[in-house]
Length: 387
Image (cartoon, rainbow, N blue to C red; front, side):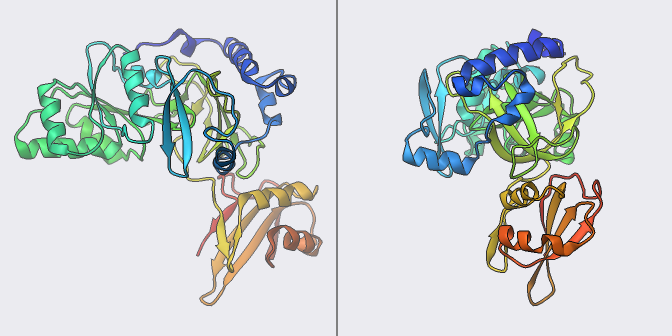
């Protein structure tokens, strides 16, 4: 049974009051004055990775975002520069380790990279916070990984889902017994059911967590194959891709995260991932909202007839016409040329009413398909490339 942080079992009212106070403390006064509840977050602009990269290029290293107590610097592809602070468990992954029953008495083999990106530091900081010892292995050199896991008495693995399998396979080839590894926390790639089961067959309980280099821990499993619990230090919204507008509860949309972090106050950071809020409460006793697994990428930009069409354009199309509730672009190819169909949820019956605005916003001619409100899929897809 994993150890629960008291914050993880509090009432929704207590959680909102605490998180609202933390949020307002990290906002500029003009923004803070607009926020009276967490639902008011939707009034603030979304920050996209592309925008952050441009801001950092103009105002290095962090795009003009006010930071304090920064002791570590990292670079992810883009490039995007991320900070790390001096506090214990600065990225908040300790909750995920506790859920995986990793703590005092464990020796964690941390195979996340320590090179350029913060993943290695994230999990090392969290492991120390829960009282475990850490072997900072990083990825690669699998034979040496096997030998160290045996000699150091490693009991828990942290890394990508597949690399643990590579270590175990190499150990079998070398005749090295790694039966003392009984726990694993994985991230950075899909954990397929067959892979999880293969670990279970070896006596290893494997759970997964979800986070990014920009915002840290977002959510984590407490029960295998169950929805993830949103971390107490992260405000998570699900919005229509290309916008900052929250979707209806349970619908798939883009994950937007506001980490509660005075050292690096990102607000409404768009991860580019698709997911959904899952109704109900976890049987583990944690009371925060639950997040479905990864459902794809929100950046559905697609080149059609040599021109890019982006989710932001589809959102603009909906915003410009009061009679349109939703829109979805579908791209096909007839063997000779691309064809674009724009499906609109509307009670209007004359498609010609939308021809001019579609041409103006999407810059392409399209077949227009009118459907009744509620008939488009709620799957987070606004541009479906069917070629």
